[in-house]
Length: 109
Length: 116
Image (cartoon, rainbow over all chains, first blue to last red; front, side):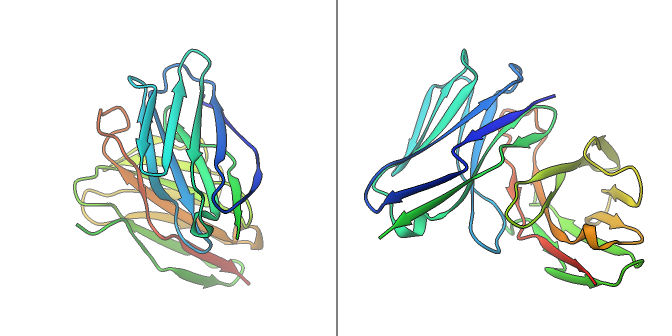
């Protein structure tokens, strides 16, 4: 089955800097890769996703890139703000949605 | 268009009791996933269902746990004879079929189960 790895597990950046989170997956049949943001005490919120027929997608300060050959995809957040602090999860659609272990992002003012 | 609704938000059960967690998917979504999350940990897949059918239950413990998604009404995750180790947040997500070109999964706010 699908296996998703995610790095780093924790990430601290200064406000205004960029943050990058990387994920790898194992199942070459996976073709949809969403990213979720989870704030304390809340459910995961879908923030951006990418499908296998494109290599990059951008939505304001967040972007996702996909390298199908290498089986990895990344989340890029530019001009980080304190409200970006949360746990971020990547996922891939194998037989079901398999999640990475999460990255705790702290944006320091 | 209401989002994924889970209830109750918080549930306290004594050891040995039964816990029933409910999930109503978004309108138009035919598939439901259940995940378990321990504090400071990730989302562990439990079960994937469509109406009246379990598609993948590879993440469900073999005993005491069951799930259903009837033709009418919400999906139910049932935990019998709860133990302290069952204390966790249980999240439900819904989506169109995973293979469909417009698959997006949205999560509910979760049910936080505490076993005392």
